[in-house]
Image (cartoon, rainbow, N blue to C red; front, top):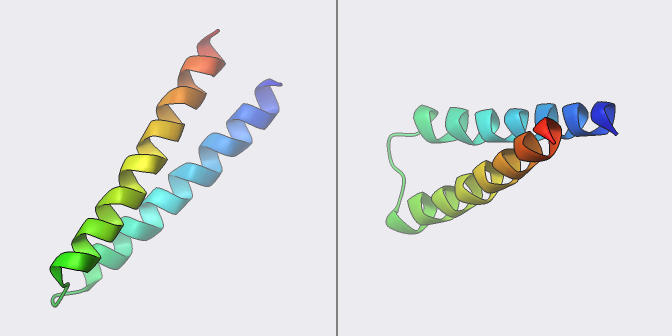
Length: 57
């Protein structure tokens, strides 16, 4: 089970970094895009937190 959690953590960390790279590379983001990327990051952070808690237990 631990290996699956580690794999999921790596996956979601990469997805989060991809979003950050997209946001940081653009200079003309609309409010809708900022909200969209923010919602995606919130979901990813929630999943990462849950996975880290599961890994500790």
